[in-house]
Image (cartoon, rainbow, N blue to C red; front, side):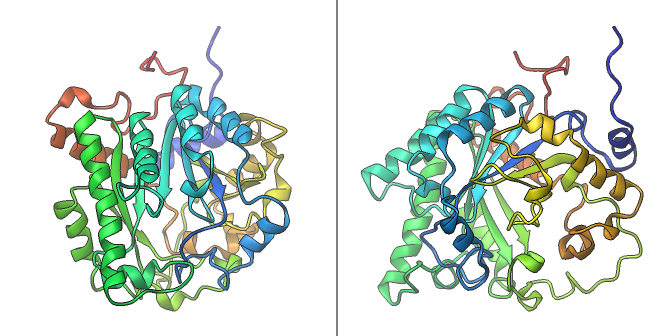
Length: 385
C-alpha cells in the first residue's frame, strides 16, 4: 500500500516555509495551561489582576487547576508522536498539587515535557521544595525553564515581586539568593546524576531590563551555569490585556512596516489547551476567545482537532496571503511584528541547551536521541523504539 500523501496545505508549508515533517499529523508542541493562580505579581504578566480579567474568568468557571486526568490524556496522546507538552499557563505550575506526579506520568509514557516555572516553589531551601525539584530531574524532564527576567536582586524584585508586594532592604538580597540558589542547585543536581534534563533561564526584553539584559544573560550562563538563556520579546497580547506597547525593550519592535507577512507558524505547528480542555487558535489568544470554534479536548482527541476543519481553514487563509482578513489574526501585533515566524526558536533553544549540557557532562553519549533538531514521529524510520 502506498503511504497517504500529506495534505496539500502542509506540503506547501513544508516547501515554502520549512514546516517540519510530521506536523501535518500532530502538533509538534502542545502548550498546556496547568494553573491560573500565582505566587508572584509581575507588573508585565498578562494574567496579573489589573492587566486582564483572565484569572477572574477561571476562578468563576472552576478552572484554576487542570484536572490530572485531562493532563494524563494529553500525555498519552502526545507520547507516540514525541510531541512536547509545554507546562505553563496563567499562573505558577508548581503550585498545582499534582504537578510532580503529572510530569512523572508523562515521562513514564515517554512524552516530552518542557516546564515553565518562576522557581519560587522549587529548590534547596526546604525539604519539600528540594524533593520536588529533584523528582522532576530524576524522572528526566526534558527542559526546565526558569522565568526570572533579571540578573540582579534589585531588578528581580521589581519585575518579579511577591504577590503581596515588593520587599526592601535585606529581603531583596534574600529573595535573589533564593532564586539563584534554586537554579544553581538544579544545574548541580542534574550534572551529578547525569540527567538528560536541560536547565535554561528566560528574560523578557522590556523597558525595565533592556539596558541590563546582556549582563543578565552573561550572569546566568557563566556564573550560574545554565544551558541557555532565552531572550523573549515583550508582548502585549493585544485585546486580551491592557498592557501597553510602550514597555517594549526594543522601541522599534512594533513600529516597522512589513511589506509582506509570511503565514504565521502557530496554527501549523502548535496547539494551546487550557485547564478546561478548551483549544485556542494560537498562543496570542491567551484568553481563549477562539475556543468556541474548536471541539473540547475532554471530548475529542488532539489529533482529530488538529486535523479538523477550523485549523485547516486558518492554514489555507495564511498560505493564500490572506491571514489578515480573518479574526483574530488581522489584529495580531506579534505576527505583524514578525515575532511569530518560521525560525523554530524553541527548537534552537533545545539544541543549544543540549549541546551545552553534553559539553558540561563531557559525555557525548549522553545526548538525548532525537533531540538534535529532529522531532521523531511514529511513522519515521528513525524513530526511537
